[in-house]
Image (cartoon, rainbow, N blue to C red; front, side, top):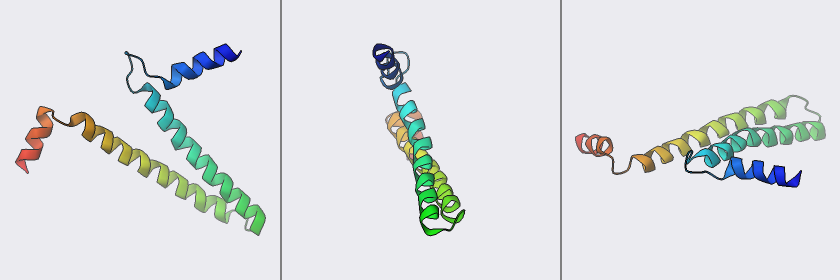
Length: 97
């Protein structure tokens, strides 16, 4: 069982020659979903502690979703700039503005 789990984790998180960004994609997906779950759980805990049932859960859930999507957008922009660096279309767009 441990060997199978180790092979699965290695398959998901180590990119191979066929899929260079596979490990990054899985990590990005886990970060996207995990951060929303963690922030929502904090909201549930605060609601239970303070007795304000849906308030902090909803607010922190929305905060987590917006933050996750903003982080994914900026990560995508940075990755696109690094992949486009030195390409002909990047030089043409830079010189025309």
